[in-house]
Length: 589
Image (cartoon, rainbow, N blue to C red; front, side):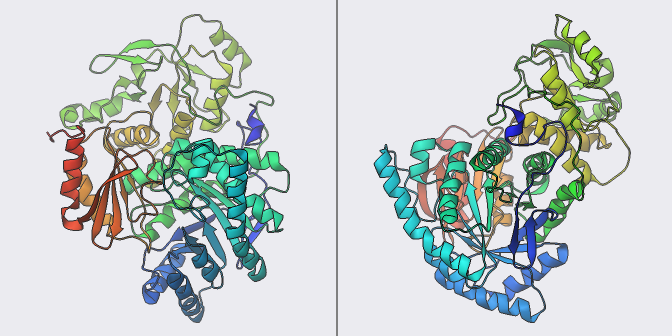
């Protein structure tokens, strides 16, 4: 499959052309800049709190605000929220977030500029049933969906309201799951089913999203979506909304968001973004604006390598098959390539700076010193250097030479496409190191570059140089490896960002769960505020802590609920007991 199926060129920037979709007075797609949006966390029935939080988001730079509408009553109160915002002079577009309740959507669309529906649960309840659908049964299901969905589409047309068809990994309908699996393909097909109904009614004010908490799944789903839209025809050029759902908080949430959102923006995909953090929502805006900033007004580039085919699969993860090379590391031999763990390389100055406290670094250990490696630096634009490298029979550790006239992701992709597979590859987060700058910028840049390549399956070792502080650069390198899912060395948390549906304080609860479980290396724990973001959207977590009712928590093993209606005050302790029961618990050191 060629690179042109989801982006004009893998080695140069070109923003995907789309039609413009108006949401109130704000344009999305077309020639508009990448728009930044967020979601409030207040109870939708608390008008004053919703208005105050919306105003704070707008002040921070948010261009569209989403509000949950879990019931018809909540949806009706959007009228009061909208009127109060208008009275205060705020005209920010509002989006109603709908799950399970078509009637709530029909009420909400009277008061907002956009409605978001999840095709996995708009007309279906999740039962996790396993069955085979005949073609006739499948067609009958689609007709049932058409009957449920058509009234909303017609009302959107009548009122001039836009729609986001937002698929989430793990919350697909049983019908889709049985035919396509819980996969990027299933996510895309779920959205296209609803889009075809909308198009049959001549409704085109559509925006798509394909969210997942796993950046690899999210990236693959968006790529496949764009490919399928292109295959459908030139008038399927709808704008795309990007987001990594349940990214979590702190550094981890920002890194995971940068890997998913940043890598797709660099490929020219994405017209609006939301960074989902388990923090007060106004903290999301500076991160989203920083991710979008490099692409503001960025012009299309001329391809440096026309006709070169990618050396890796585009729609599923598969690590590049290099050969194993052994090096003398800081504390012993380190194998690089050949499917071995991605290694962390540091300049000598970083190792010297942390040598006195190595015992206290835990898993954040430098492994190889850059200056001691027999590294072959290559300009991927030089045919002579590529030919010379490919003529060498034994594997060499290779990297892109500093200062080449390519962006880092394009440079390493091109190198991976031209050199023989046997050579393991050292990735760099920058090819032009400079001193100074803000840590957030370093974090986002490094995560975008290294995470994008690692999710492509490229890279056997990494070198992070954008952040000069030795301890921070080491921590950042390891956290990028964890977020990209290529080196698991600590507990992995999937935490939703909270909204008006949330049944407990997510930030406080997440902190308590982390305090009890942060030493469980390799265990994945999902913390979900309600059933909407519960057993489906936590996808491949080992254990789940899900709001079941006010003050009550349900506990899950995988997607199966096993403990119900546990008082919130006991729930963290009961979660620990559940982890013990399944032999995943170890006592902290």
